[in-house]
Image (cartoon, rainbow, N blue to C red; front, side):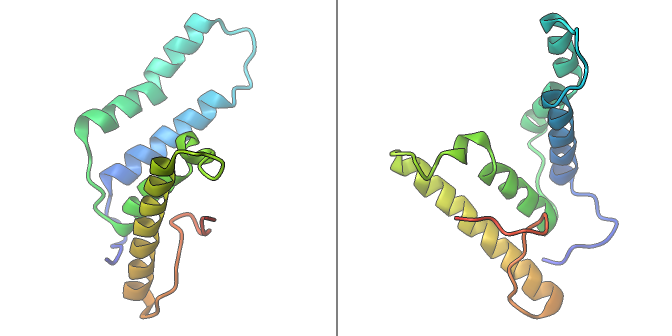
Length: 128
């Protein structure tokens, strides 16, 4: 799975846009905005991008896009408390996604450098 420079991965691009819009929305520096105004801002930023991802169901067309998507899942709030969770299904899902993500990362590195080095799509490794 080699990444071709200049190739645009639709899932990667949309997910990056969603994360940037969500970060901006969640970390506002503006005060004095009403709840209705915040709802309007959400609808024209991250909410629109979120719906576009759900409706278009874009495929990851690069290993980087697949890794980015899996990192997004692993870092989501739904998995944040998995270590303390008594929900074994949640722990199993997190583990399965993590191992699939790590496998793709190791295959990408093997294809790129000939070695089996593990790599995060963001340049860091995830902790278990």
